[in-house]
Amino acid sequence: MRDLKKLLRFAKPYWKQALYAFITLLAMVALDLAIPRLVGKIIDQGIRGKNMGAVLSISAAMLLISALDALAEYADPEKKWPHKELHFERSGLVPVLLQAAVVYREPRYRKLIEMFPAAEVAAHRGRLVYSR
Image 1 (cartoon, rainbow, N blue to C red):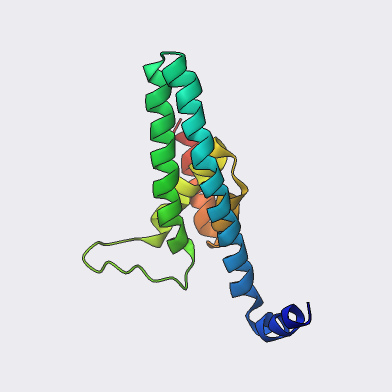
Image 2: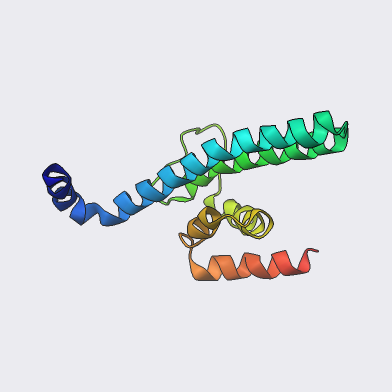
């Protein structure tokens, strides 16, 4: 316990980065736990229930969640896009994260949205409402 207090003292100047790391860790644990549950749903609803539509829709959801989580790490303005041959606009994540926050109701997506300027989020929020 004493070592933890000493570590926290050193981390105090970097509390934002430490908080972001903790939130990212929680998101990764949630994702690690979600995948086996979704595979269980595929088995129960799709294979046992002979419902190929359930298999395809749950598989697509798993693929989308994994892709979004892979891109979501670049919502952090301090994290640089490593692939110079691929053009990546950080602001392009805003509408995707907004939609994911509504559809999947995951708090981690709302936390990532908070990292963007309010004006940028408001502009995309208006488009999300009228796109339906």
